[in-house]
Image (cartoon, rainbow, N blue to C red):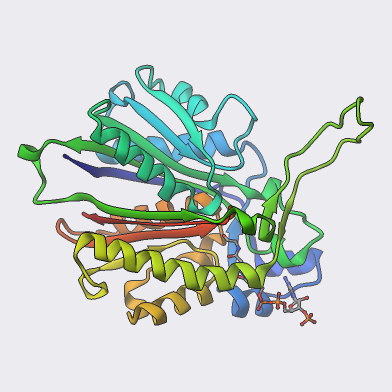
Length: 327
Ligand code: UT7
């Protein structure tokens, strides 16, 4: 039994904010942002948020897969910025799509979220409980960044990506295609390095006041963690699949910083030709970066049946993970 991606979709809000736009409202510059991160612009939602973006990406993924909403058995949305504490983004998307036969819930693993959700989906599909699933990575970080903290707010953008998956029995195996291996991890001792505290309305018992929740980050700590942990988990997933880096067509990496991706490429001893990038257009859309990039590769016809690719991410938790799959 293998879980195969049969369709992808992605969506970003139409409003584009360039580095120069930000330089007009805070002490930063296009030059600083571009050279330190590779980001040139990001999409920011000035209207509806997470559910809307997720549903738009999901509709495109369903269309690409040729699957009707009522044929979906399960929806898992990876997000840390659902529009509500409850219901989940997945339930709201289920309602919008009219996917009345699907169970839906969210997974919280920040920028590693899509990897964690895909791994969860793969495990569930292989139990035989579900046949067709929808995995979404979506985040609306513009509503939780501290717009007075230039060291974080310039990095993030809003967006969503989605993949429709189907479990194939041995006999319908698409030339060995599907998810081949996965490896992921967490280190809660480093939780402080990247955090977005929950908003609270305060509590009359303790006399605490309402507090906003926003992102705080020790950028260099995250940088060091990413360039160490991501290559390590990619190596482990390669070993599990009996492959080496030369067998991989693309490493679809979380888009947090161009320099992080370059360092990962160096450690893996692969050229940047194998590391597709789109951070210049979107910034860091957290749980959405990997499925947006995967969708772009798919739509540009860059993925051929038989190609082996690795999706890998890292983020708050701290968390990290990689999935090896054959297209
Ligand atoms: O999805 C995971 C989420 N996060 C990440 O992946 C972040 C990983 N870390 C990074 O990408 C990098 O650490 C950053 C891009 C966040 C920062 O780059 P850096 O090379 O580590 O810069 P830095 O924090 O050491 O700051 C260098 C200087 C400082 O000024 P001084 O102290 O040298 O005078 C900052 O105050 O750059 C200043 N600075 C800025 N200047 C202009 C910080 N943010 C800005 C800004 N514009 N937006």
